[in-house]
Length: 334
Image 1 (cartoon, rainbow, N blue to C red):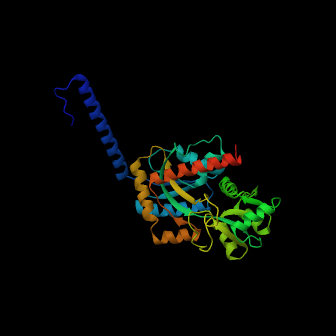
Image 2: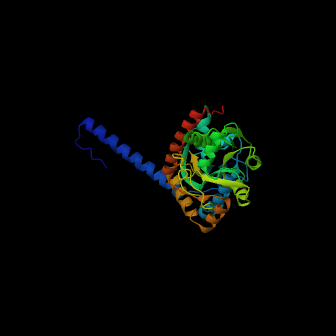
Image 3: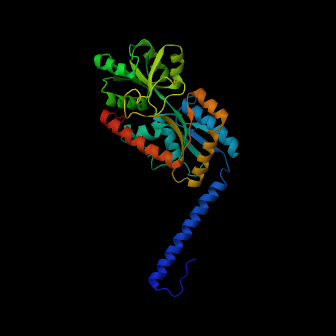
């Protein structure tokens, strides 16, 4: 309580303003706490901007099952594929900020789309509240097992010696920008060849139609184990657990290329911070469960968790990186 007796008018007004501000912030904090205390009271929907059966969809379904069990409310996955995951992001951005509509998003949604589209119907930093990282996964630099390059250094040297033959495959802007970053750091002259899907791209690699590609582990590892493809490096900050002898790009002599794949959970802008924090805490607990680790391992991904602030900070850093790469490589999808 602010004591106002005997104060001059100006001081009295200032005291009342301060008292009002204190009451407002106290009421806001109480409302945030109450929102989290009663949450959830109804089913939760997790939107995935990709078709069922893909990596992000499978990650979301494992997460949804565990959230439902722990929070006591059904948690369902709704697929909204199309337009490079833009439709799914739009759906969540325009939803009520009450914690009942969430988005599972990879780098393409929050970092790549803003880099390659001049006009985007959502802003990843203005239209969402960040909850937590959910999973990490590697990008693996791969070639046909018959290719003469046995290392990144040899691949770069081969590309420079055979510029007319040197090319790379990608299935999305994410893999295209990652390869362009690799080219910027090495000077390798690989030309881009786009593909619609991972299976089509892997066929091209195995047949020798393309020289190299960054590939996620799901569509690749079966071919590696069969001796048909070779992994030269991983783009991540550490070695891939299933390929402990394969170096990171940094270890292979390519600096400033450490990029990990990830999936994260976000909510519409305005969702109470207490709800985001509660969800982040639940995710941290879920990702420590033995069966979740085993199910994620079968998908070739690692469980992840973070604070909302850590997730947002990472999106800011990576968004700036990919905008600079897209600009340097003159990549625009509009």
